[in-house]
Length: 401
Image (cartoon, rainbow, N blue to C red; front, side, top):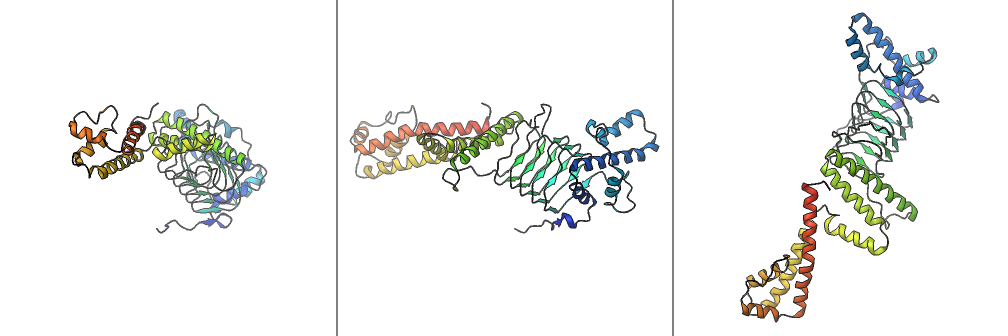
């Protein structure tokens, strides 16, 4: 399948003034000082542009809220020094009216080869980073996105930290590839995280959402989650594997609880499956581990209807075939007798002999002991498989516990 995405521009070679501004902020010890100082300057310029409009007090307050002027964080930011402000203005085309700048910051199709530090940066406008590639770490801890933020189709090849970041108008992470650890944790009780992760891919590390309260608009359709750490996988220290498993278990458990709160049934089902798979890999002693893994193989940790149904059907076919081979030599047994006998033994609380003719019943009783052993195994295993099917049906149609 051809890739129709446009070529990415190396950030250092870009003519985009916003890209230049971001790179300029990275040269300071505190990049947020430069970024937030320039945002404060832009806000002041926008107010100057609106002053002749003779707005009512209600309209003025509405514009202030729209522009982010009601932000206490921005009000407490230090203004840029005159020399820094002059340098920042030079990054934009000559004659730019900063009071009339496009309200959306667009940084599409760029490749950032160096680490980015936007720690506690304030974004007053919608900002787009679609189809971008971040080759090094990105730190956006504590950032404040007053309006929307879009990373659709982008790649984070290293870790990215959105911890404590405020997404006031939602965020788009659809089709994003996370190559390293992605942190979205938050400790504010009033935080409601509305983000779109549809078709996102977490390649190596499970994302950390601890403390986030998922908004019902949170979407996780067709997400690719990282592989479950395996004890028999690539050679790693045992303590490292166990730590990774605990990390996965805690993260899947948290996402599962949040998914249940917002009614994301398929997401909760997937988290249950992955959490139990991790617990199976981490289980001790060895016997318990194999028992849990067998449970996963048979019913995909309680989420598959097809696997136990197929196993039940296979059990009946084997039992039927064994009896049919012997019945071919017995005139008293027909194929229908074998079907009735083998099927009846697999249904709990149903007697396979209730409506059998006496001569047929005597012929069945005279069968070799190995056939009775197969029937007994089928009678024991079939209720268990039917229970697993019912459990999966319950998870599919009624997810509450």
